[in-house]
Amino acid sequence: MKMEDLVKAVIEGNAPVVSDLVIQALDEGLPATTILSEGLTPGMATVGELFQEGEYFLPEMLFSAKAMTGGLKHLETIFSKSDSDAIATVVIGTVKGDLHDIGKNIVGMIMKGAGFNVVDLGVDVPAERFVEVSSEKKADIIALSALLSTTMPSMRDAIGIIAKSGIRDQIKILVGGAPVTSKFADEIGADGYAKDAPEAVARVKELLKLS
Image (tube, rainbow, N blue to C red; front, side, top):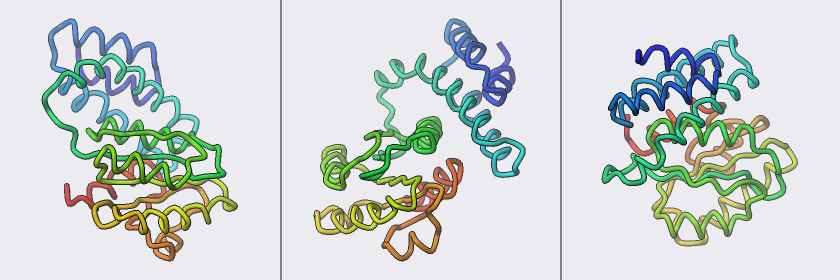
């Protein structure tokens, strides 16, 4: 198969084709890492660029992210058996009081596609849960999401509790979500802010000095 066909299918958000092409690539003996790095990831990176340029909107991005996730499912077992380690571990979740997860899910999918080990805690996550799992998983990044302005204070509270937990010096905190701004991130003591999923990956790499 041609890898550009897989890239195109991801960009178009064609989940059945993405799934079929990943299976075909595996049947042809292509390494899972190649399928990820030359097919799924470039496709999603292009979607991110189209989103930033205003040519794609959230629905298109979500279709592509779901298509990519379907492809990743065929590779997860292989990756879990591989000796190669992920770039870093990211614990992600929507803060307490907020039940929205579309943006968070897209960020998690793209981070996973970029080679990160992503631990998704879901929605309405108490600060203590972020601390508990981050300690257990020896996480490098905690990514906090909020879609409602009314739940933004939960980000401040979470960072305060993380600071008191004793792990703050060993971890970087990234925040994002529709109402969140770079200024707010600075005010609450976050290490970084990202306005969308592709930028979140870039910020994490910057914070961990991976780029």
